[in-house]
Length: 431
Ligand SMILES: *Cc1c(COP(=O)(O)O)cnc(C)c1O
Image (tube, rainbow, N blue to C red):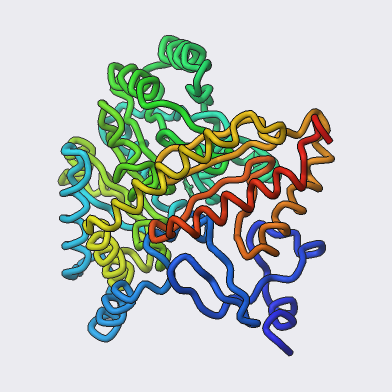
């Protein structure tokens, strides 16, 4: 059997209807922004392999650091033991995070980083003897696929089978342009009704990825954070997608005036090398768990907490993030996205177009006929694949979220292909 047949025989893929899915593409090698399949066909990874890759695939510097670590210490349990890569990474993360961040708690991925954040926030109140059991989140938020992370995410077709078991969350509008006052009023009403019951507010800062790269400005978020703070509510920034340069600054929260209390990281933290999560918090949060009373302990941990290989990959990625060349790439991508956005604004196939830093999103004009579009989505996906570009749309949104090493020419090739698609698949309003 070849790779694809064996895959069909034995493997169950994520977010995939296995009955109707077309064959997976067998990738054998990656280099820079490119992935190579079994036949040697190459694909430009325009979505950074689900938003994880920062510096390109199989980066030699990260590979060297991880393989060195692998030959020294591959893993050790993290309760009662520690190691240099974990301590070094915590110190270096705290160096670059907003100044109130004081401690780092490691986990396995974005979902667990969020679980940790939510549990920390809830137990913070519990430990004070004044439990607060409600959480505020944005509509259409996505914070992960485990139960706590699903609970604080918007209810959708993804969560439908589990909805009866998810805990209750108060959802407010995202303060996108034009919606700022509405979002603010909804928060205000919750604070008036039950401000004393609300433990935390969790949000994806400035860009809601899974919702369709929905973007909003720092000002209105600052306003929401200020109101939460005045009620003592813990604010949790889920930077799992936006962290490490995506929005043009190291963190999306670096665009803000306010400093959230908790941050969640994953995806790009290792440069996209492997699964890893980190949740950071302020000293005040940490202090609420210090006690002679064992019951106030944070009873949470994963077998692979602070895995040394993941720490080594993260340290290597942080090194690369300190290279001027990395930031030149980020800034150039941002400039190119802006110019391309302006160029295609007004095209009849384009309903809207937006960008923030290295993230670009185009909403296709679909008219009212969504069934027409659902077919178009697959045709678009296949159209780009044929042209050697991995551009996996979210509903009627095509987005580019590339590794920072992508060249000007490679990015231009993606733009040209999008323009070709706009002319090949005209929007419903004109077709
Ligand atoms: C992807 C994502 C998660 C979940 O991360 P996983 O590693 O897939 O569990 C959480 N929050 C945000 C904002 C994400 O984009």
